[in-house]
Image (cartoon, rainbow, N blue to C red; front, side, top):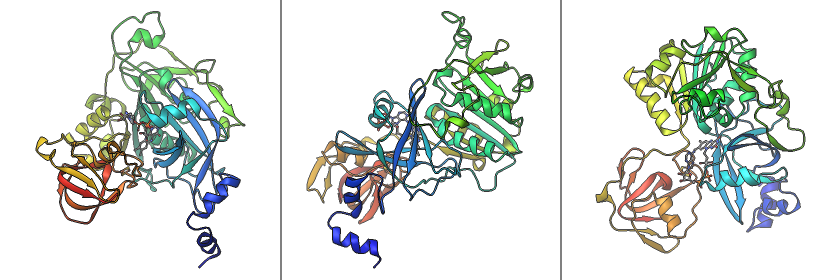
Length: 428
Ligand SMILES: Cc1cc2nc3c(=O)[nH]c(=O)nc-3n(C[C@H](O)[C@H](O)[C@H](O)COP(=O)(O)OP(=O)(O)OC[C@H]3O[C@@H](n4cnc5c(N)ncnc54)[C@H](O)[C@@H]3O)c2cc1C
Ligand code: FES
């Protein structure tokens, strides 16, 4: 038995870290935590946190996610976030960009209240959506909304490594103001001739995009930046060249000590203003033509995509139709489920370790347990992190992602992606 184990035994029933946190929350022997050192509200509805993890942090691979535990009103809530840093940061800091969801508990809380000095729980980086160790010669990164985070980490890593292959980064957003790290994207595009970075705003009219009063048409529009000045004309056919003029656009609210990421932001300081050299052609949502325009070599490259369901579906459809599923790597932040079969929604769910029983509502067992007043552990709520795993003592459950049934007794299942089919006993 090691010294730490011995001390843990002496401090039982509470782990040693429970006592150490009374001295200083970042003083731990086993638990990993992180202190928020800087907060930047860089895009209209998101916040970027710089974290300094405790010594247990061993870094992440570009594209992976971490779980953080945040205490709100005395209750700890765990959520997954994908670091936006390049992998292999020497200063051992970590940066998360979090979009505030209108009804979201943790994201709204952090957007409003995150401040330097707050300490959060941190789990090691995990996930298979990651930049391959042997980087392919052609890479296409596609993201939408908050899904920009893991692919931005990949982009930054490739920029740091001075990747010499062909890289296209296509991002969809509501508006230029909603794109976090815009100034840095422009900076990367300016510095790497072989990187083509394209921003698209399918729901904006050309007038809105150009900032004309009241907008001027209902056409959809693309925004783009690619390579050094003058190269824009050689970019995606039919798309106007956009260049970034550094200036006063995108004012940011920032707090905390000197941000270790400040130096890596674009030389222009605040987010760059995006200006348009010529009227853009109308463009819309992702489809085969988009792919043909921006990455005609896609069949020979590797594509990484992360974004909302409709974007993921559109990309998957194209790759499936082309028989290129193995070239496509995907990550989603929300769960896509099969429709609930009304015949499943019978009987009752017993949470035997708690002595609680409730009528089967057809929801996930995690939702069902929470509705019954229980607080099982969870992280991603979409079958990725396994935090919610519990033993199904008896009964049948349906996997909400695949639709598959499983009725073996005493099996561990993920509560967030399984629903009861008739009577079920879960040991929580
Ligand atoms: C692997 C992984 C990586 C992630 N990385 C990031 C990241 O880098 N940045 C980031 O902002 N988020 C990321 N997320 C999403 C994040 O974990 C939370 O789900 C999100 O912040 C909402 O949490 P909340 O507590 O605010 O909302 P909750 O209170 O949990 O949910 C409130 C409502 O919002 C809906 N909702 C939750 N998440 C989303 C979503 N992503 N899109 C649309 N509706 C949603 C829920 O369905 C629910 O109705 C990631 C998720 C996963 C699984
Ligand atoms: S909460 Fe992550 S797998 Fe269920």
